[in-house]
Length: 189
Length: 232
Image 1 (tube, each protein chain N blue to C red):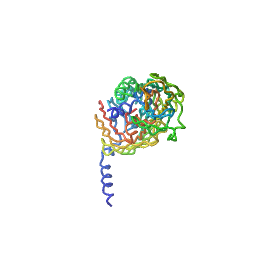
Image 2 (image 1 turned 90 degrees about the vertical axis):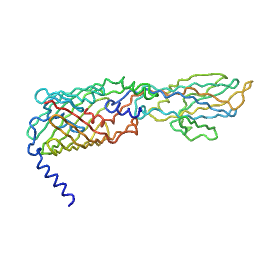
Image 3 (image 1 turned 60 degrees about the vertical axis):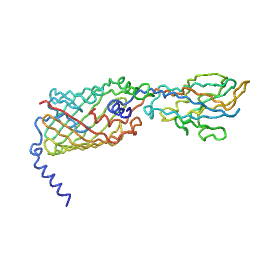
Image 4 (image 1 turned 90 degrees about the horizontal axis):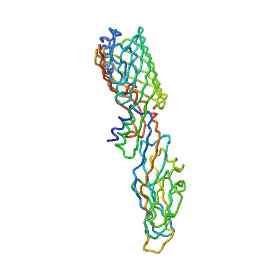
C-alpha cells in the first residue's frame, strides 16, 4: 500500500526531504556455551529506503539494552558495527574465535567490552562517530561479543543467554532527490 | 514499395489538411503545453488545464499555474509572455512554487511505514523558462530551456516537433538533455487534441528516475496526461 502510494507522494512534491527513521526495536538472545570463550552474535538491521543513498546526516544513534539474566554469572559484552555481514534480519549468525568471518577485523567498535553483573540490565545509546559510516547504507550489522567471565556460587549452568533488548537504529537525514526532474516535467512545473 | 503507400497517404492527408490551408489560427485555444515542455504558442483565452491553467492579462502576458502541482499541495504562480510574428513564436516565463504539504505528506508516510518517524518533503523555489518555435506549415519545431532552483538545481534544454495531422490533432515528439536534476536524456512522444474548448494530451515520457525510495528503484517511463478547457 505504502509502496503504491509513495510515487504519488513524491512525484510532484519532493526535491529533497527531511527524513527521520527509527528501525523497529527487536530483541536478540545470545547463547554462551563455554567459560572464557567469546561468542559473537551478528544481527542485521535494515534501514528504510527513504534514508538510503546520498543523504546529509543530521543525527544518528543506535540503542540497545544489555541484560544479564543469570543469577550468578558475570558476563562481558561489547558491540561492533560492520558494513559487511551475512546475517539476515531476524536470522542472526553466531560464531566464535575459531571461525571469525574475514570482515570481522574491519568492524568498528561501538561499545567497548564491559562487565555485566548477575541480574544487571543496562541501556545504551550510542552516538559514537563510528556510526556515521552507516549513513545511507541499506543494511548494517551489529556484532555483539559475549563471554562468561566469572562463575559465582549458585545454580546457573552453561549454556546461558545474554539478552540484547530493544535494538534500534535512529537517524535524521536530509535526503535530496536530485534525479526526479522527470517527474516535475510531466506535472507542468 | 510497401513503405511508400503509407507515406503517400500521409502526404496526401497533410495536403488536404486544414492545417496547411490555414497556417495559424488567429486566436488559438489551449494551455500552451506540449507533453512535458512549454508549447511555443500564445495563450489567447482563459484556460483551465491540468498542466497549466492561465488567465490572459495584456500584450501576450498571462498569469498561470500548474493545477496538478496545486492539487499536490505545491501551489505555484507564474507570469508568461508570448508573442508570434509570422512563423516565429517566442515564450518567456517565470514561476514560483511554495510547497505547503510537508506535514500532510509526512503523516501519510508515517502511517504507512512504521520505521519512518517523519518524512517532510520540500519543493519551493523559482522556475524560469524560455522557448522559441518556428512554424513550417503543418510542422512546428521549437526549443525550450528551463531552469528551476528548488533544494537542488534543475536545468534542461529540449527540442520538440509538433506535426499537425489535422487542425485539431497533432503528433508530438520531444527530446533533450537535463544538464542538472536528473538523468541526461529526456524524451517524450504522444499526441495532442486541441479543439475550440477541449484540449487533451496523451503520451509517454522517458524520465529514467533512479531512486531507491521508489518501488523497483525508480521509473524509466511515466505517462503524460493533460486535459484543458478553453473559455472563449
